[in-house]
Image (cartoon, rainbow, N blue to C red):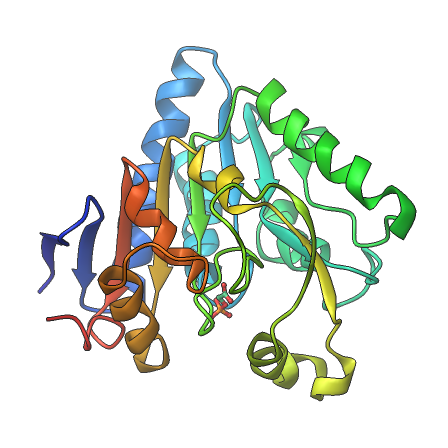
Amino acid sequence: MNSESRSSQKIKIVTCQDADEASERVARKVISLIRERNEASRPTVLGLATGSTPILLYKKLIQAHREEGLSFKNVITFNLDEYLGLDKSHPKSYWHFMHSQLFNHIDIDPENIHIPDGNVPEDSVSEYCKDYEACIETAGGLDIQIVGIGRTGHIGFNEPGSTVDSITRMVTLDPLTRKDAAHSFGGEAAVPTHAITMGVSTILKSRSIYLLAWGAAKAEIVAKTLKVDPTDMLPASFLQQHEATTFFVDHAAASALN
Ligand code: PGA
């Protein structure tokens, strides 16, 4: 059973039986926009996320490509973030993640894939980030942004302290975020300390935003995000100010909602 409701703000909340059902619903929205745009010979611009949360969604997009003939030739993507100091070839880079989980299995034009470069020299990071913003604008802006949520309340790597007007930039990762990533890096010491991330304002410019959250570990932060007044102490709370944001959650992640 799933239910739909609206929080006291504009955010729509869709509670699904499990991550599979929620990912299917999000996949169908993405697929129908791509089809509509393909028919009109117009590009679809997607903002994509990494982490364990969107993996099922990507599997479903691959399946639609293989079994339903969905073409990604006209799709342009921008990823939210990347660890600084990791080369593309590093198995834990988000570049590697996106290629192995999605891009290697669909017909997207490699030139249409944008992922922040984790190897950009420190003295050119700020110029690089401005270019990333400009590139999103030139593509026509993001149609759909997929985001997960970290236990710090981050979206992308916008950790507590990220302001509503923040743009793509270099950031320091929160200790909790590094702790949560430790298992996949084989220890906290190996987790990078910095990253490049789209800003809160970059995300808020997207025409639609889908936040995905599964499991009991996300219940508290999801509830808090919807309850607090928008604050840079919990950057995901700024989504309350967006006109077209939907949270897709499973029952466990919704368990602390009233
Ligand atoms: P997760 O990360 O998908 O691995 O839970 C989400 C996030 O930190 O944004």
